Image (cartoon, rainbow, N blue to C red; front, side, top):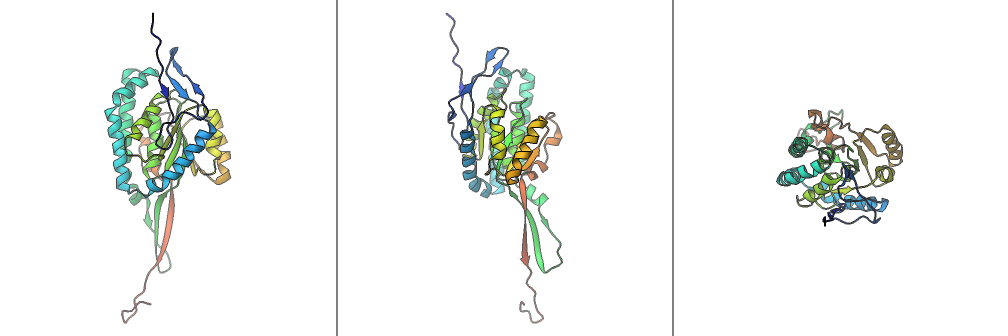
Length: 293
């Protein structure tokens, strides 16, 4: 008798843990008629739980030194390198050829390393000492904006996900990510990489499920500070922009149709998710006698 294959159940990733979806629902994506696994259909409550986890993690992650964040991102790349065979296999299960799968994994590793190198450098590029007409020092420096909702590309499983997450967390933001509905395998496995890479629990939260069920909640939640949309549906983008108005979320749209292009490796992707804080400090004047006045 033919043996019935036991499909893996891919859990979601919230607060550094791997819970099953609160809804108890699953779906089974297929490739060439073959089932890929049991994938959680995340609910609105799952998203709310993920936002709470992201907010709780924001303090420790944003207060980490830039050098430490750089080390953590580099560690993600190290762990991904060590498990690249597994990611290649999962990409092939989802329809990629071996050559394309290897290209995607290697590009994802290289992109993480690229942004890891910017963690302790972008601040020098984007900060400034501003000329003012009064007796003050005037400084502007970037600070992380907070919790970011991310909708990863639908047509890639790994490289688009990495290209969305890594610039967001490089500056100290935390995020809740909705991954590809049709190609979710690598995203869930990537959560296992994050879990073993010194990334604080809650800094990155990964959800699977139907975009139509979660998109409005991701855009309208009042404790989300920004939104990254990395797909090409103009109707979805317009709906996000409308709902983001309620708490003035910053909405950023990346076109990842050419996700391997060099233009997607630049520090301005980090700048998209920082706020510029300006500080004024009075200059103490020295009188003729040498005393301050």
